[in-house]
Image (cartoon, rainbow, N blue to C red; front, side, top):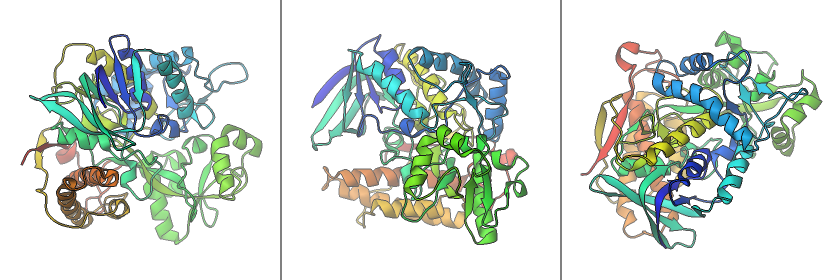
Length: 517
């Protein structure tokens, strides 16, 4: 099936849908969505969306919190756009019918999460992303210029004379096709499935990063992978996210003895930034040899279940009562701060190719994302992408980092790994705690696997599992190399052999560009 449109959007999360709605006013839009059109990280976002709407808040204060969480690497211009444009686009969601929670007097109920200095998180109980996706899909479904192609996996960006002209895709039936488009937006989300333990759905395999890199686009900050500290940790049960909003409403982290331990590791205690809490949990488990728990037993059980019904049901399925029981938790891969490098209008280094949402790296998150800024980023930068996509074509002028040229390894015979082998290696060697020895080993193994995947591609052209594995290996290799290169600890990137932050040498962005052999 070959299609043509003015605009191609790859991905159906908050960024892809919001951009498509604006683009529809300027021409025909095709959205390629990988699986069920509502299966994205947007729908899994529990906590909420941050915006400076409260009486004690301001864009300046939101920016200060964002930059503090970003540990010295946030791009100030990107943060400024996020916090100043954010309230406008959140109000737009309200006008479109988003049913954010309200207080008894009708005012927006604002929650607080870790590293926020005030309450600024709008929420719909603990299913905020699902509600935002509902509102956006309702508008997309009624928009004639937008065509949605379900169960279509984009496999390759089409580039001619340095300009992106669309993409190839494969349908669930196995049939291939192309979409020819004057402008293409990557809104493919993150890459949590690179790791054995993750909060992300099965579709989050880093496809957009892999395709963009292979098309010659610059990628940046890939070493910064955020591990959410509190994920349900029960043998045999799914790794279900336990939102940071739980701690914002008073949940406590305790060890096996029932002791609160977070102030041992950071003065901010349970509301310290995510990277700090995640590492503290690992250290406390190592110190005590026992699990760590989240407890809300000191709060009103009715309030807990009413405020967090989705989480309460997930705990109940595991045989636990969120309002009374201690819930065992551990970290898991959650969010990628790095991605396809863009300017503030979502342009990449390839003309005609744009990126927005988690797949993109604007520098807004720096080394560590502030809680509930992700949905806001999707709205703000998707709208900016749409505006740029309807204007003159030009590639981004990216001067924030000098890109290192990388060459894909030449194809070579070898064993193609199973996806679980890749994910296990990434979790063990490129996970929460890293060292040169582990990263070196991982990078070498990933490079050998990548060579084997390239060699197998010709004979197994229709093998969906091989395509998925090749994507995981490609992005994993890029992450491992970036993490090996950054010889310091900053934000979500922690090196046990370089445990200190080094502003003198490393207050900069690490960027790569794949070049032809």
